[in-house]
Structure formats: C-alpha cells, structure tokens
Length: 312
Image 1 (cartoon, rainbow, N blue to C red):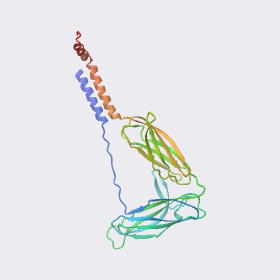
Image 2 (tube, one colour):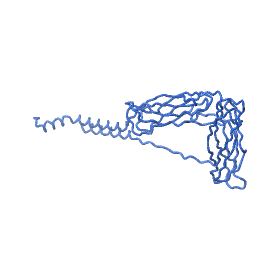
Image 3 (cartoon, rainbow, N blue to C red):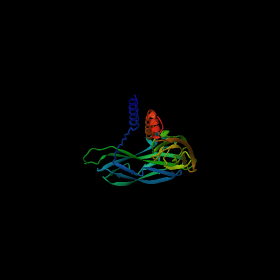
Image 4 (cartoon, helix red, strand yellow):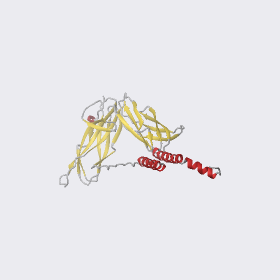
C-alpha cells in the first residue's frame, strides 16, 4: 500500500511539473516595402490668420522602375484609437486641404532618385483658431511609357497638423490607465493609457512612468514618448517596463504633461510579480518530500532510537 501511494504522489508531481512548463510561440510578420518614401512623414506647423506657409517634402522612388507620381490633397480625421487616420473630402471646422497648393499635379520620378516637392498653405484672414489637418497624397500612377512590367498603384500621404493662433482650447482627460495583467511571472510588464483630446488643437502628451516596490522604493522611471491626439479623439498609448525578474507588489504612477501651459494628467495602478511556475515546482517538491517523510515517520523514529542507543 505504501508503494502504491508513493507511485501515485510521484505521478501527480510529474503531471504538475509538465503542466507548469508550457512554452509559448511568437509569430513575426515581415513588413512590405512600397515604391515611395516621404520625408518628413508629418509636419507640425504653427501660424497666424493671413500667413502663407511654404515648405518642401522629400519624395524618393525606392523601386527599380521609373514611375509617374500623381499628387492629391485631402483632409484627415482620427480613426479608432491606434493612431490611424482616415482621408476625407468632407469640410469641417478642422479642415485644411482647401488652403493647400501642391507644387505640381503630377511628375515623373526615375528609379532610385528623389526630389524636393514644394507646397504652399495660404491661411485665410478669417481662419478659425485651433487645429486644422490635411494630407498631401502621392500616388504612383504607373510605369512610364515604353517601360516593361506591370504597373503598381500605391498611395502614400504626408500628414500636416496646422495650429492657427487665437483663442484655442487645450484640454485632455485620461480615460483609462491599466496594466495588462494583475499578476506577472516575468517581465516586460505591459501598460496602456487612453487619452482623450477635449480641446480644439492637437495634443502630444508625454511624460514618465514611475514604479515603486512594496517598500516604497523607486525601481524604475520610464520615459513616455509623445503621440499626437487629434481633437475629439481617444489615443491608446502603450508602453512597458523591461524587467525580467519580478517579486512582490508594485505601484505604477503615470505622469503626462501636455499643452503650452504644461497641464498634467496623473494616475496610478498596481500589480504583482511572482514566478509562480518555479514556485509551483518548489511547492510540489516540498509536498512530495513532506508526504514521504510523513509515511516513513515510524521508520525514521525507530532509526533515531537505535542511533541514540535507546531501547526499542
């Protein structure tokens, strides 16, 4: 009977150990290259009513073919919370496209070459203060005449975020701040903040994440890079604490600043760190040892009596 119990205990221990070790699988996806490259991809410009802004954007043909590029202009708005934008011809109080004038409607670009493409923004005297958002669209119209190969239609846009001086509103709220899980075996620990822009200009909240341990000692101070949040939109801002070994209770304090007046958003969350797989194995081993010692307690007691020279 003793042998059967011992075999059963060891069998259960092995099952628990195998269950605790479940390797994960990660997948990586390769990004596809396009035929055009724009630099810079985003312009952030401040101006006054009545100003004329002149600028250039570097357009590069990174393909092996000579191409024809067609230029268009659109307004854009935020789509979702991941930072994506949607192009539109609809006119709103935040529109910009009607003030933009591309240098040329189309142009030819030889393989592996680039140009500085000019554009203008003529701001009306009665322009509404606040943010205005537009995009210059560069579309590959196909291969040049006489060139072999299949033509590829691709579009790439440069975003222009213009702020008109005057009576503007800079206001943001922190919709949520959370850690992805409340218990972490190992790092990196992943966080996510959601910031809503309640004003009429685009904002770029940035700051830091301070992490303290159970004793109140700061163990990390992580800089948070700014990301644009358009008026009326919510933007997810993910970040992480790149530390592998974790143990105990942690408090994370997020501090974000935004706007010309240095307004701040501050909040906290907490989480636990514990290597439960290793801890589970240790507990399993201790359980097995304890069980075996309990089953053999009479024999151990007898052996001790003999060693100590006592009568049995």
